[in-house]
Image 1 (cartoon, helix red, strand yellow):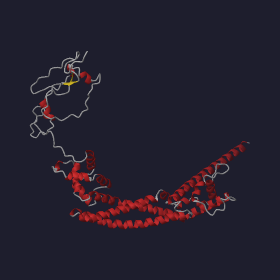
Image 2 (image 1 turned 60 degrees about the vertical axis):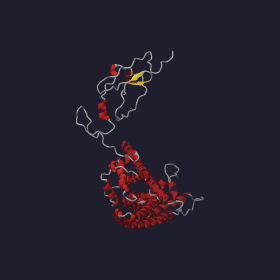
Image 3 (image 1 turned 180 degrees about the vertical axis):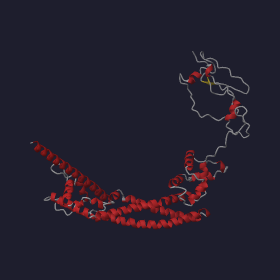
Image 4 (image 1 turned 30 degrees about the horizontal axis):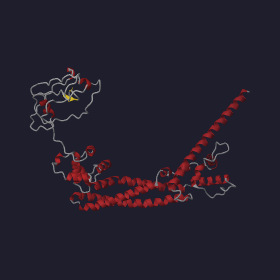
Length: 447
């Protein structure tokens, strides 16, 4: 049997219901879907006014058993109610009402439904993130710009300044804003913010100088502290008579063990040999050479056991990398160069940068003096770090400062651990002897 012609009803499809008739009203109840099928949801009369859209995700095929499939059966209870189109247009017109004549709720006093929408010239996501950032800065834009030009860290902290740097307008964004000829009051918050920033020549450069000034003191203090820690650790190790005596004791022990071999008659040993003391075990496999060293010192030279108290800065120094300090020094020097460049460039800014230049020049004078002192200290530290390797007979190129301090700190920990284990062993043996003595006395009394 051939299919029915387009527009005709199939044998099992009921005719569509007649449209509802009412004064000033039209049904939203029917629209054609498929061949001869009807479903609710669309206006039968043509739209007279553009309405605001409902941003839904529409269903194009009704799943069997769903309410949408049931609604297509055109039963009375599933039909849409009659809609007053004039009221819908009044409430949801896409055009803003300007005369206040729109009615609301049947006779309520009219009011404007829409405010004029802001003009968006910047990428929406970037503008949104920018507005979030600005909401965390609780001062008006002009005051914020003045704080930047005054390099006032009491008004803006480092996090806020770094966020401002992230949201400096790009060259393309600045060109877009400059070419905008409309009402600037209609621009969004992000665009207004960009326009304020664009009033200041090289605003991003100034913000980076501001960020450098905020962090300069803490950065220099941290550098100086670390450099002094290295100097102190180096001095303490080289001046420790106790450590020197322990090293001599280890040399004596090693030569005694290696007597008659090619390893014997040594005048010294490589520093990493300290870490092998725990690898050499006694015949009973319970004691290591490190345990024996601690035992020997405890019996013969107990005053050496607390040699680690001479090395107060060793652990802190073992966590410092000279390469990292060099990179920080370079960062400080580069930052100072940027300050000098911006100070020179701002000479042509005019009145807007007069205060900025004055504050920056005062900062530069102080900062340069501090950095000169820091460079001198850094050079001294480099020499001292090399001298520590040389103190133990090592080549600084092959066994640098970091390796020396790591070996020493591990040796200190191994020494302490072995000493504590010796003490626990001695206590256990003492208790065992006392227990046996008590047992013997008890047996004597029993007799």
